[in-house]
Image (cartoon, rainbow, N blue to C red):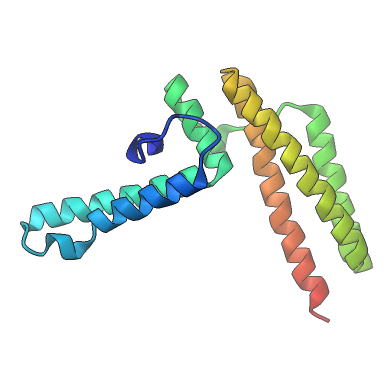
Length: 172
C-alpha cells in the first residue's frame, strides 16, 4: 500500500497536514456507508475495505516514523523487519543507556524539575533527529535514513517512559 497515492500526495517526508485532513474527510465522506445503501453487498464491502485502507494510510502519514518507513519502502522495495533490527551505532547505544539511567535516577529522586529538564532535552534531540531524517530522505540516503529512523523509534519509546514517570510522580 502506498499511503501517498491514496491521498494523491507527493512522496515526501514533509506533508501539509491541512491538505491531508481535507483529503481524508473527502475520502471518508465518499466512502460513507449511507452512500452505498442501494449498491450490491460486494460494493458495500469494497467501500468498507477502502475506508479501512484510508484510515491505515492516514495513521502512516501522520506518524513521522511510519511515514519515513513508507518512503524508504516505496523507493527501495524493501519492507523493514523490526524483529531482526539491531542498532550498530555504539555512540547512540551508549547515549540510550545514559538516558535510561538518568530517567531511573529522576524517578527514584521523584524530581519533577529534573524530569521537565530531561523531557525538554529529549524533545530537542527528537527535533534534531527529525531534521537529520528529513535530510537523509531528501538525499535518497536510504540506509542512513533507516538508521536515523531507528533512533527516532527509540526516542519515541523513551518519551513514553518519560510520560509514565511523570504520571507516577503526580500520583502522590
